Length: 194
Image 1 (tube, rainbow, N blue to C red):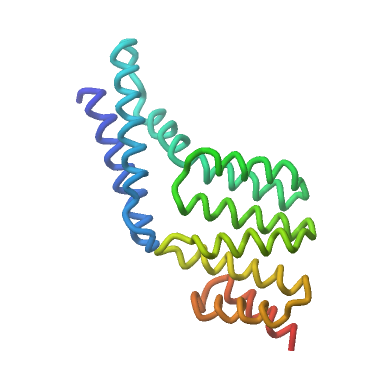
Image 2 (cartoon, rainbow, N blue to C red):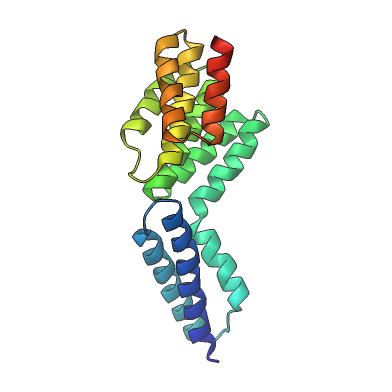
């Protein structure tokens, strides 16, 4: 089989696989993601053709994954750093992920994680401001992200003594995604409060 055709097939399967996962999560079909994969594939094919260098389909798959998931990978590393108490480095990675012109869901995830680090740093008012703004701009079809945002906003309210607002957020989380980790954590916080 022609190696260039094989790379195109790998790209199309990648789009179908990851696009299908996004669709199953209720995030809709990721048009931007598909265009990024196709553009990356086009550039890769052009470079390979001009330089007359064959590209392994496995290497191509790894490269296209790293390229399209760049923001989420940075967010994951930032989360790892924040759990280890390296808040400044985590914030740097979250801000870098936001500057990478990523999709709306990655932007929301990055901003929610910044809010979490602000809570960990006891910068509750900043966290409340940021998470309230994130909540107002959560993309449609992202109930998981809305639940995460509301839970962390509730935690920030709780830490500032705004118990009524915290309870409202925790109840919203429970109604939004009743069987999620966020709902279980919100229920635990409500139980402790009682």
